[in-house]
Amino acid sequence: MFDLQGKVALITGGSRGIGRAIAMRLAENGMDLVVNYVRHKRDARETADAAEKFGVRCLLLKANVAKNEDVQKMFETIGKEFGTLDVLVSNAASGVLKPAMELTERHWNWAMDINARALLTLVQNALPLMNPGSRVMAVSSLGATRAIENYTTVGASKAALESLVRHLAVELGPRGIRVNTISAGAVDTDALKKFPNREEILSTALARTPLGRLTTPEDVADLALFLCSDFATMIQGQVITVDGGYAIRG
Image 1: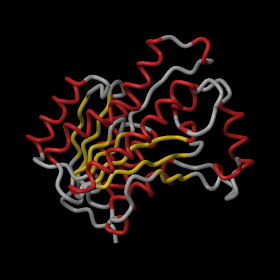
Image 2: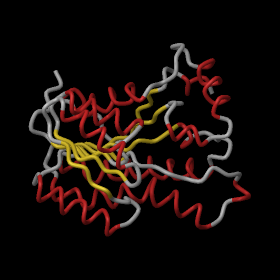
Image 3: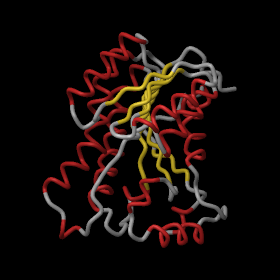
Image 4: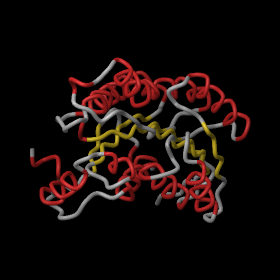
């Protein structure tokens, strides 16, 4: 049902958490990988080693997706090594967790560059390697549409990301390229450990999730796999939420 043999995917921020889970799910189904990372080289190597056990190729590329020159060099390497790109998963994210009144211009620009503008740079560089049927996925969060304590810059940047996806979907649709957003609920990853109220976030999410458990990275990866498949050919420009129903509780 999900035979992705011979296809190539780039996952930014693919060494840990949701990015790693997506990489593993695609590798399980035969897709060769490019795993992008910035700081966590050991984690990236472990991800590559795990992926290659499925018989696929996994190329590790260090690049800061907020820097145009890094992105350009990354795609030059992808072009030389694979010559094509079938799936782009924009997952790398960062941001400062502070009250709005404590934010600086640097905090704002940092989050916007990595979480939103990077998608545009990635797509611009990926397009020459993409054919009709290729997929672009951006990983967002519920903070794009609701206020979360200390989440101002990240939430605003995720909202910008979702808007960018809609515009890209319109522009790239005639080329046969599908572009969508995956919005994840409260997922217990290393990123969430930076929240001072992490335990409160998780306990509240668990209590308010109709399906009775927290979302896992693997749940998000399952949705990414579906969006790579022929079952998703008419899904375009959408924000698809995977959270066990948490968001519908208001």
